Length: 118
Image 1 (spheres, rainbow, N blue to C red):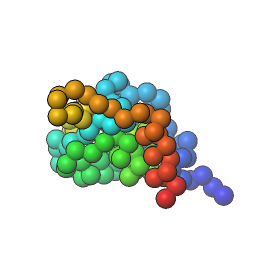
Image 2 (tube, one colour; image 1 turned 120 degrees about the vertical axis):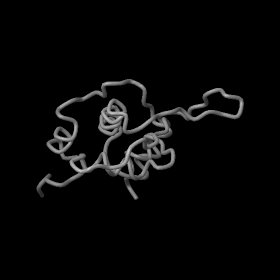
Image 3 (tube, rainbow, N blue to C red; image 1 turned 180 degrees about the horizontal axis):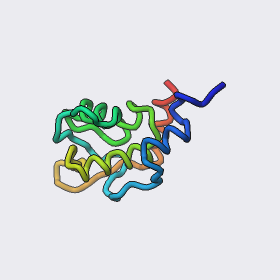
Image 4 (cartoon, helix red, strand yellow; image 1 turned 90 degrees about the horizontal axis):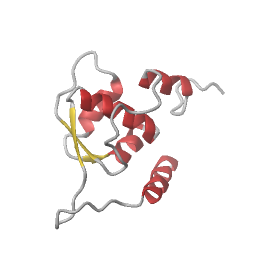
């Protein structure tokens, strides 16, 4: 079976990120909320267009990765590029008292794996 077209195809992932293995910014965790700040435009990478369309309302990084069927690490690289281009804004969820309450990352990873298996 050929790897071409598979979601975990290393060549495809390499192409999506321009060969990078880390995002340019370290401001994303699994529950960081992403909101579109621009409309999709001609010539944009298809993943960027998909992210802009799905983030009309705040969406967590882990949900974006699941919807795109991409590893979270690759999704963070794409989001970092989009943040640099000012196509998106990011924020962390807050509780009513204004303090950040983040879910356990290992639990969120398990949820992501479960979503991918659906």
